[in-house]
Length: 258
Image (cartoon, rainbow, N blue to C red; front, side):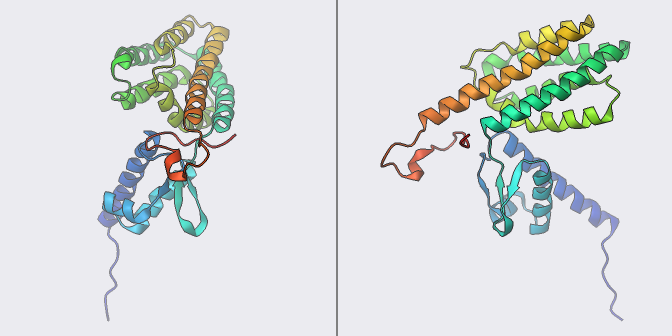
């Protein structure tokens, strides 16, 4: 009899590690803007770049599809999910409703340990914000992580698992747009002052004020992104007689019509 080969636990672990690595790399390239909104994801090119098999790549792409970071085109493969002002406006409104409710519950329930988490997260965020004016692009990953930690610390005393799940999903979906806001420093905004005002209101347990400031803070990102995308769309508006190839220079954001 011929002995059938079977996958060992080590094989399964290696496969999961490859999927996780491919998923993390692709996700980072999408969120950082290296893979542009709407871009075709060429599977053969990605397989060679990441040195993985077709099934591993498909599993990683399927995970990103579930996070709405890529879209499927039937048998034609995958694309990076597009961005649009209408999408971000809707996302912003829903996120405000969820995050401010979680924040309200957290501030009311927060104990000394909660205060400690908020203080520590704000301190770490402040240190990276000191460098934003000099090198926003270079420290965008560090800022994004510390910004997430601060917002998470603020709502960490909320007892509702569903509010936490929904907020995490909405926060993640906003990341591509936040990065656009972060690196476009020509639109005036004092992000540190906004965070400090939220921080101070939270620590004195001023529930109405901290919720209002957080809503305004989230809206400010929408305002910056609106200005940036509207400006880019105007600058790169196709002129009569120009070819499609000439219309959108490399490195610029592709924006859906709304």
